[in-house]
Structure formats: structure tokens, C-alpha cells
Image 1 (cartoon, one colour):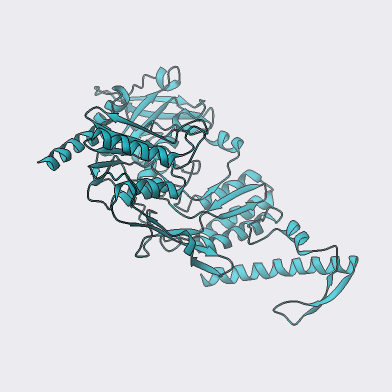
Image 2 (cartoon, helix red, strand yellow; image 1 turned 45 degrees about the horizontal axis):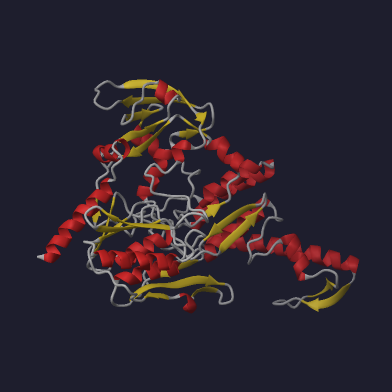
Length: 506
């Protein structure tokens, strides 16, 4: 860190003296008053009105606010890096080497700046950010850049199996894959001469929606992005169709398809608008309650989701259900207060939810936000029967925290194909760089009562919220889901509730 610190101090001094020279020069023109600079003994002519600190901020931007869009590209990159080093809350937790990250990317930024290449500059920024395994980090994405990079597909989608194989789970009618004879369930053996495992490992994640925080999320993203390319790109595949021993080799060409292969193939996520309900409830066959939560927010269709949740619990108790399935697959989270409220219906005692330690400029570093602590308080009606909480890698934000909180209770088990998304943090960081690109990042971490980081994955890239009962990702599971329209995870949850309810009666 020492070498980088010296570099940063040098650059900051150069920038500061440059700014000082500009201010003094302006002062000589518009008139000035003599003032002594803070932290120095220098008495210099500083401009009188109309030059103000606000007008200086307009020109040079504000470091605290991350407004660097009027600076040079290299200075803006340096300012962004400095803010990440200082304000990002998981540096040690994730083992991030900021020196190496900076030294790797600054030559690309400088080259792009000298060439006045806006795309190269953007890609350098995005590469830097996507080296941080945290879905809370993001950069605005120009549609033209994304379309040029991954705007076309080869006409099929694939997913990984636990045994290492990769199989096709959707074939687009009329596209090259369909015409080449690739069938549903085909095993992709090789891609452009590389074994599929090696091809996936080399697949860039630069155009995923967010940097994956776990290896499981990474694997699913690579399966999706390997099938994306610029329009007209050709790829050579080796594949084997199901129930066949023959291996075929074919060449496909990428065509525009409205990003079909980047859709949520598991059909768990739901784009919620103001006219949709953020949660759905019903009683399943076998007298088992079911609640699916898509997000933790109010909408015009359901302005009081906490009340709707309570009403569902009352209905379940009145029906004397054998147990409850809480489906958090695709839950993108939202308001922590709603997660706390929902969890309150499952406990008879208070459960600690979170503390927040966040970067505070006024305090000069990370500090406890005392007004942001939360505890789950018991709420009526109380449900104490068997509860199966369904999770997967599309369970995000406070959806993960809800699952993790309920996991403390003896009558609750987590179930699913995979662990959760692995990113949960206190937002607030923002940087704007030349070109108007907006970068956001977390500035705080959520802690449990022992001051241990909750939910967010460490540098090991493993989800901290995992299934107690893991349903294997097998070919048969995909076949049931995609070909027979059966939800094998839900079926397993129902069967488990019946077993636990029967044991409770005995």
C-alpha cells in the first residue's frame, strides 16, 4: 500500500497545485482579497466575488459527492479508486488487493484517455468494477455498448448440472441451433475447440447485470453469457443430443434475439410494476400454506403488503394448515422493515436483525449507525408449524436476510438448488465520471449481534445462506421443470412438510 499511497499523494498534490494556480489566476483578473490558506502559512490573493466554492465545485467537481465528470479521465479514475479504497466496506472481508487492481487498470485508462477512446475508457472502468465480487457494485450501461458486445445469441440457452455437464434447456425455433439439429436436453461438450468447462471458465462476466459474488452465481452467469456475442459472430459447437451416442459438430451464427438467453430460465423472478402485487398467497393441495415474495415494497396493487402478509397468516391458521412454504426464489428484496415485519410472525422472542457500520465523512471513517439497528419483534398471529423457506441464487438483498433470520428458528429449514446471491449491504456510494457514467457501490456492512458480517459472501465466493436440504441439479430435475412443468423444489418442500407435520402429531 505504501507505494500506491505515495503515488496518490503525488497526484493529489499536482491536482491541488493546478487548482490553486487556476484560482489565483482568476483572482488576479476579477479582483481579490488576501487570505491565509488553511493548514499552510501561505498568504495569497484569493478571488473576491463572484468566484465561490460552489462555482469551483461546479467546474472541478466535489470529491465527497463523487462528482468527477468535469475532470480528465485519468484524474476521474484516480478519484473513483481513492473513494473505493476509503469507503468500500468489504475490502478485508473479500480480500481485495486495491494496489494490484489500480496498477492493472490505470494503463488501460491512460491509453484510452490519450486516444480519446470513450468505449475503451468505459470498458476499463467496467473491468475494474467487475473485479470486485459484489452485486452491490454497478455502473450505468449504455445500450449501444451492451448491444455491440452481447446483443446477439446462438438460438439456445443452457444450464449447468451438478456433475459438471452443461445441457440445453431452451431452443429458439427457426434459429441456427434449431436448424443444426440441437435438441432440448443436448449436452454441450465443446465450444470453439475447448472443453465446455474450460470455455466457461474463460467466459467474461463483464456484461452480466452485476458482478457475481459467489461461484454458483458465476457458473450460471457464464452459461448465459457464453451463448451471447456480437451479431454475426460464428461459434463451433460439439454436442450430443439426449438418448443418443452420436457426437455432432456444427457452426452457429449469432443473431439478434432481444436478449432471449439472458432471461430468467427458472421463471421465479417477476418484474414488479406499480400495478402488480409484491407477494402472492394461496393454500396448496394437502392443506399447506404458500407465500411467494417477489420484493419487499408496496405497490398500487398492494399498498399495504405487511397487512396482506398478516391476513394470509390468519387465513392459514384458520384453515389449520399442516405447514407453510415461504418461497423466496427470485425475491429481489427491498425494504428491510418489511423483512423484519414478515419474520415477526414466526417467532415468540425478539431476534436481532442487524447493525449497520457505514462510512461517515463527518466522523472520518466507518462508524456504527445507531439509528439503523433493527430487531425482529414477535407479531400476531404467530405461526409455529413446519416452515420450508425456498431459496436460490436469485434470492437477493433483504430476501436473503429474511431467509437467514428465519433459519435461526427450530421449525424452519432452507431448501433449494443453490445458495443465495451473496450480496447484502448498505448503499450510498456514487461516482460520476466523464461521459456521464454513474457508478454506485455500498458504503456500509450489516452485522449480527456478534459484529460478524451477515449474508455477504467473503473472498471464498460461497453463499453464507445455503439450503439445509439441497435439491440436486440433475438432468431429471430440469426435465421435470422444463418439459413437464413441475416444480421439483416445491414438490420436495411439500413432501418434507407432510413428514414433519406427521412427526409432530405423533
